[in-house]
Amino acid sequence: MQRLRLGILSAANIARKSLIPGAVAAEDVDVVAIASTSDKGAKFLAETDLHTRDGQPLSEVVRLFDSYEELLADNDIDAVYIGLPNHLHMEWSIKAADAGKHVLCEKPAALNAEETNTIIRHCNTRSVVWMEAFMYRFHPQYEVVRSWLQNGAIGKVKTIRSSFAFVMQDPGNTRWVQDYGGGSLYDVGCYCVNVSQWLFGRGPRAVSGMMVETPAGVDEDFLGMMDYGDGQTALFHSSFGQAGSGQVEIFGTNGSIVIPVAFVPGTEAATLILRTNGKEERVVVPACNQYQVQVEAFAGYVFTGTRPEVMSHADTFTNMRTIDALFQAAREQRTVWLQ
Image (cartoon, rainbow, N blue to C red; front, side, top):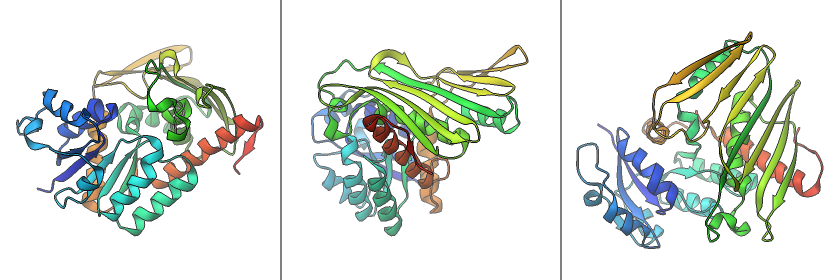
């Protein structure tokens, strides 16, 4: 049986708390190494109670590297997950590809569409699979939502309204640093942009935006509007200063759909709400670890030598291009046209 040997670049929170547990639970995947330039990797392995699928303590099978280069040079590693700060995504995606490693890269793909295009082209040239890690797309609640939309349950979709916000309490977090690709749009607003693009099936033709910036020039709050043509629009709000929210509402000519926990439902059952003809239907979707499903899908692309489908390169590029335009629109206080 084929198994994907996965190395982890950086022991950041997203890796320790979400990606690694999901990968450990995944079929046909072995987490074999962690590279950390701080003590977080060693501390994680010393404290974790995670076990492999065959019952071995994770701390006994995972090798710890002090440098990312050392991990990439190891021939017993097939692929890497990059959970580094945003400004390092392009550099380490390219270095991983040059080392012959397949790459699952945390969102956003890079700092702009130009960097994103460079990553995609380079990885394709090196014949390695590269995928942006928008894990929410792998949750089965979206199979239900997309089925409703395809079957015309709410008529023609007119507006998608979404939000993703939380209170960033750590003043030293890299997400407050502009040069590192900090800010709420890069960190959580990108989900709102992404889900609107996915559900409409295309990128917007025009965008406008407004942001509340910190003295360091990072957007603490971002409000965006996207025009998809044909009378279809999307509105979103992202924030580092508001109590947790992560909801998507889809409004059509004959009804609406609410996804109350749209992006991080955890491992609890998810509830969807369908409203039509004055009636409300609630559908419970069984619990699922979307990080596990994402890693399993990534491994499948590697084994078959195919480019990602659920989160395609075209989706990644369009998403980043839209984010570029949103920043431009907010800074120049005007509508930016993409088409």
